[in-house]
Amino acid sequence: MTAPPPASLSREMALRVGLAARTLPDVAPKQLLAVLLDKLGSPLTEDKLAAVTVDQLKSALIQADGVESDQLQSPAAIPQLKEAVRYLWGEIGADNDLPDAEAYADGDLPDSIRVAVASNDGEQADGHFGSCQRFLVYQVSKSEARLIALRSTLGSEQAEDRNVARAGLIADCQIVYVVSIGGPAAAKVIRAGVFPVKLKGEEPARAVIAKLKDVLAGSPPPWLAKIMGVSAEERVRFQTEEEDWAA
Image (cartoon, rainbow, N blue to C red; front, side, top):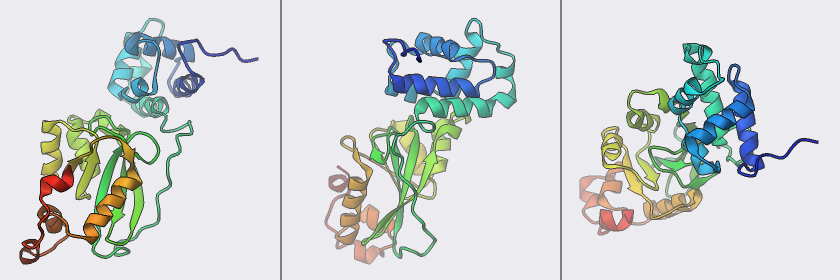
């Protein structure tokens, strides 16, 4: 019979740690668990594991007693560390009900816009721009919306400027919905041509997109009308103020 995980560790967390350890060179699950508990404190939670970055994991392992650090310092270890972090996040190896992307080709949805949603869990709008695990990307028109891509943010952890890298992931989008975003990060997102919209709280991403679809079908605020390609003359008639809609 398999021994249960420590009282401070749920079976879900134990599975993530075990799978992550298997990807790392000469790191046993017990060693990785000890490193994580030392770094993050007890008990381990989904929020704590979701905040672990590749650099943090690499640094903690190199400094840990009993862990062979030579291989971890090699450039060849980066893909292994990235995969380990994905396991810790629950992005792979655990059932977190990730949705499937729907088929889409340019021109399928005329007069549509592309929208990103910062997400951590399933098809939820529950992510902070700087720490979300992925962006859900939707193509949205007045009459239809499709989830066309799920873009992991893991690769941005090795970038010189993570916010710039994250903005680059969604540079083909016109809007990004986030639970929160800092001022400097927002400036970089806007510089990439994306309009950040802060949500009041977490909610299903489909509900966020449904509200946007209704706005597109009605009287969008001037900034959104501009994104949609509406002429300046037509935008004059829109009465909804940008801040009222975004709120």
